[in-house]
Image (cartoon, rainbow, N blue to C red; front, side, top):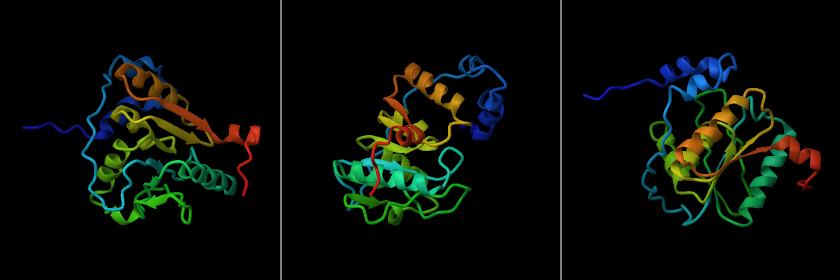
Length: 198
């Protein structure tokens, strides 16, 4: 007789922590953090033996803007020149986020053909769990990957709503012995002009 706790219960309980109205201790004194077991590696013919899992989508943390698209494309191109990249685009429209697409980049495989509405979240999680590392928008999968033992680079262009999340991700990860979690601000890359044009 399993008990099911809907995620909305957690959201309601900790909403004021995310919004900065309650101290972080409100969360840390009420939650335990632990590593998660990795799901089995998907059996997909085109899946490279070793790869970097990439998931970039638009939203508050990563507005859909031309300079963001250009920098993300250059970032994916740089990674794919060293290690095959599996982009976790779904082709599904289920919320206000839209996947950034990275077509016509050598070394990049799109997971879109493998996705269905019923299986896409489980498949994305399994692909992340067996990646060399995860690179993506600071959100959903970026919070999950370290707890499955996958080093993570969480990218954003606006941290206005992310500040408590970033602190919690690092502290919770440290408490659970999670994999490395690093954040990357695209504004910093623009400021130091790392030369990602062309």
